[in-house]
Length: 229
Image 1 (cartoon, rainbow, N blue to C red):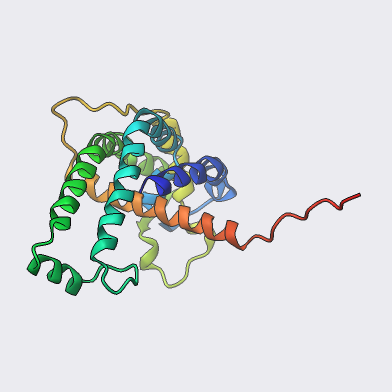
Image 2 (cartoon, one colour; image 1 turned 30 degrees about the vertical axis):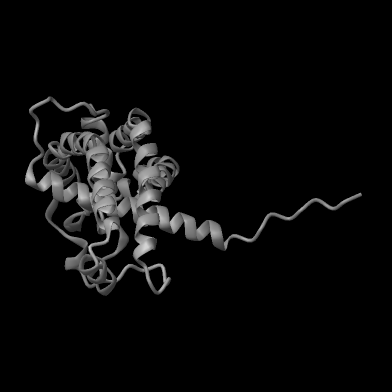
């Protein structure tokens, strides 16, 4: 988790600003349009800054999570009887039947990881909710400016020209309305149900971006070595 989190932040730092200010944001649209709220929020400056701040604020937590994940992987490997680096249900059932003490150690590690993750996840959700609370207003601002009658999900279209996508325009409106957000929720704060779902979608988007970036780097040819004299 931690390595993906760090890589995803680097991806956002490089891509967020150019995407938010792309030509699509300035395109004139009328009638029916499409938008992806998750991407619109992920590309805001407030989201990128908040996640960077959380990465710094909770660095010690992420370092501990990474260490405990290594320990957990080592424990899982002990139950991987066929050594294929995949812990199957059959192998888990066999460990339960044998009353392996490794299972209790795994449970302890998983519980500690969850405890360590909770403060950062709560901070992420608080920042996301602060941005999302302005999404409807930002969307309406774009609707009025571009004289849009209907906004649909991209999945609703079999085909649509690029200029019908107003995601970047909504991002630009959000950047104006919510330039920054706090990452410190009140002690009694609890996220709304849609915030939890949106957080999961954003985490999946970040991990997908990180994997894509890693794949691209692996596919790049090695840099040419200077000729020896």
